[in-house]
Image 1: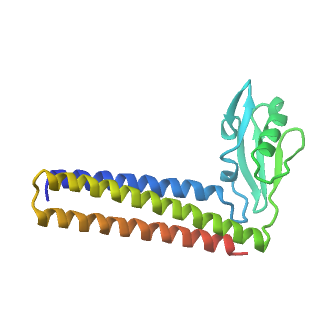
Image 2: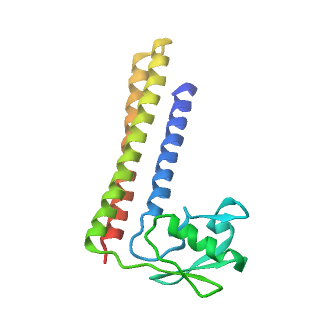
Image 3: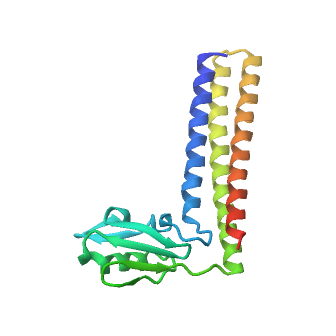
Length: 187
């Protein structure tokens, strides 16, 4: 195997790893019924005139399986935190006791669980599309090497290797989605 093909494989694997990582980051946002601090990852709070991630202005934790607590570092921004949570369209109704924002995560209905499972599956399909686009890019690079005079058998071997790498990433995505669906649908 030549250095050119090794570079193509490495770049291809790296791009696919980024696609899988993106999928995992998106799936963290899909709630599975249990309260987790990561549910509030996308929440932005108006802090001294600029939008700031919630995690940079408060400690976010869980009290139990149904309750998320947000302890602001400055009590003066508690209303801004509540506004940020409401504006994030997560479907939460935050309450505060003057020092802490408390969010009770409602239990998921069967219909909502199915919707979330569908959303997780859609994220998985997006990741698969990204992997297939990466495969096309890698095959285009191999085609350029073929046009530059690389032997046919090396090119065929490279195409086969790229397809094998693609298959392994697609299987990894399917496994991640299957795990997330099981998590979502478990009551």
